[in-house]
Length: 303
Image (cartoon, rainbow, N blue to C red; front, side, top):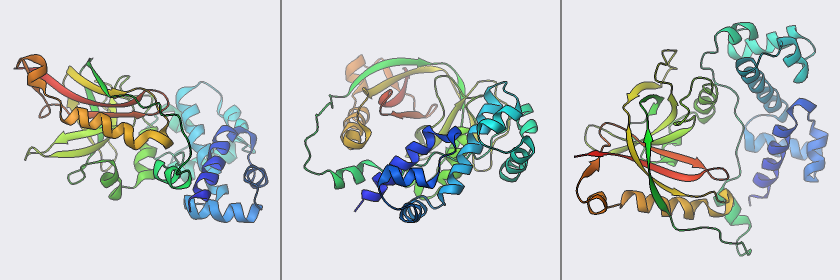
């Protein structure tokens, strides 16, 4: 049922690795073993855009990041990503982002960069590979203390959603993630882009948030739908699992970590000297399966 999700994800990953080499539909079809027309149809069906439009968008996203983070000449960046001239890049850039490459370099404001697509998820993998033997690298969740300095958090503080899935039911994933991708140059070094989590509303109920930590002195633009809030310094208990295979083990790993996090007896562990501080600071969620693993951070303070 999900064979094409897996196949098109391989196409997407290949495109990402070869953006400066002008990837073509013919090359993609060779990767998959189907005709170019059939690959094109399935790519459009699953990604919502044609392969040509997707490649063009990802090139412009990489152009914007190079403008923001490097000193390369605009002409050299244009050539690197296959534009016929600097003028051609300027036309495409202005049409997509509403400003010229030079203006963006001078003032890289938050913009919705075209994002890297993910269309193959653990539930798809399990449906396709059910019964296959896999080495189980899952361990028990553990915990540690971490101090996080004062910072700002810019994101969407959803008033209804309680988890990742319900959050994205009411949000434009491409726009939100694209804007967050554009914040890498001003993000907090600890609470990085795409750090999600939970906050307590006025009724003491947990609700979901998604965004990025920002440097303490950030005073730039706040995109529509986002909020910028100050987060005080303090200690967190980090409930964690080391790196794991996202497709094979994600559900089990997240379940183990969150079970430990939400049932942790703080009073018993610290003899009543500390309490949770979730009214003042959000809980954070770090999800980097192959790099850092999975972590849930709950703020605490002395009584």
